[in-house]
Image (cartoon, rainbow, N blue to C red; front, side, top):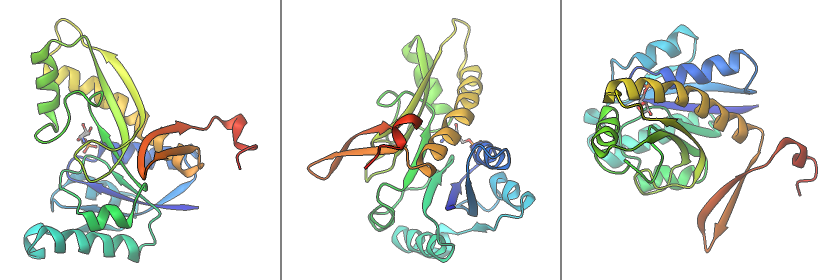
Length: 219
Ligand code: GRF
């Protein structure tokens, strides 16, 4: 059974969606540790409520971004983590972190990448930009994490209509519901080995979802 490590910085509703999917046996895996860069992240409390090890790692005490990331990687290794899920996690991952877990880190972003992503686009800022731009659809994206910001290969996306009277807040709430479907589905697909990574010249170009019926004939 795959072991999952989840990183959170906030309320942890995406973490909760994964916890619930596992409890309902929609995902066959185990969350073995939840780590946060924020001491008061409610996501840590959600882990405690489920008797999952909940660990705050202080960026300040670590002294540098490199040491901070190394401490997180060592904690993930101590828990034998196979898959790292960034569920509303806001700190930058180091090259050491990403290379240690190459193609085994997934992130949820509340827009249809490549729109409204990259540096400075997080939380409500994403939706404020979408409303300001006047887009007619937005949505959520789950992607693998690489050295860029929100640039890794896309795994799943789902769109919602932006309504004429939408505010950034109403759009955020509607997309959050979408995230709670999409992230557990991506985790499920990974755990069932149904994500085919297509690489060209050592760069992931795309991710194909292997449909169930094709699994049996997979080489
Ligand atoms: C979500 O909107 C997610 O897309 C973004 O940060 C927010 C985290 O929410 N990365 P939660 O902590 O999972 O409730």
